[in-house]
Every structure is written in structure tokens, then in C-alpha cells.
Length: 145
Image 1 (cartoon, one colour):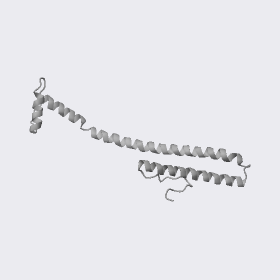
Image 2: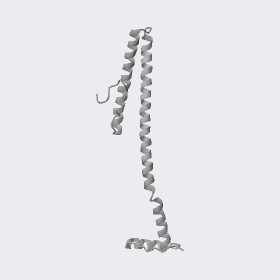
Image 3: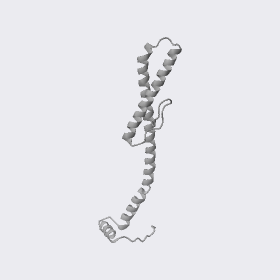
Image 4: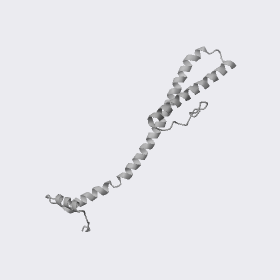
């Protein structure tokens, strides 16, 4: 046996319910049952949507960090190959002066990569509306300098 419920509905809602129930094979009880089932079925959807939205935001941030890291690797490799091809053939046999020059060139290389990445961060910040990354490579000027 089904439990009995007493409901109070607005006049316009009552008229719509009576109009739907007047059709053959329809009853007020069946219409109200179907409507309640549908409402209760989707009631928890907002909680699930919020959990998914939070997870997608986390994944988006992770993807942005991964893209930044990949950009750093590509920029580093590009500059390394360029320095190697331009400078290696001109290096004399290693001596103290050669090693000092190599260290200076390496420091210059790191600074160039840092500046390129800082410029890319500033460009990304302008597009995405977020603050530029505060991370800098060792030996590179920070964005605040």
C-alpha cells in the first residue's frame, strides 16, 4: 500500500495538473510521482558538477605548468644548439682562459634563457590575466628587477 500525502498547490499549478491529468491514461498521482522522481534524481547534480569543475580547474593548472616546463626545455635546447654551432668551432684547446670564457658564455646562455622565459611569462600573463610566474632560473634577473 502506498502512503497518502496531502499537498497544497498554487491555483495555477493545480489547473495545469488537472489539465494534464484529464488526458487518457494520466493521473494526478502519476504526474506528481514522475515530477518528484525527476527532481530528486537531479538534486545532487550541483554537488557533482562542483566537484568536476574543481578537478578540471586543477587539471588545467597542471597542464599550464607542464606547458611552461616544455617551453623552458625547448627554449633551452634551442639556445644550446645555437651556442654550440656558433661557438664550438672557434674554441681553442681548453686552458684556464678557455674555461673562463666557457663559464662566461654558459652564464650568458642561462641569462638569455631566463629573459626569454620571463618575456614569455609576461606575454602569457597578458593573455590569461594571471600574474607572471615568480620563478626564475638561478643567475637570471627576476621580473621585479
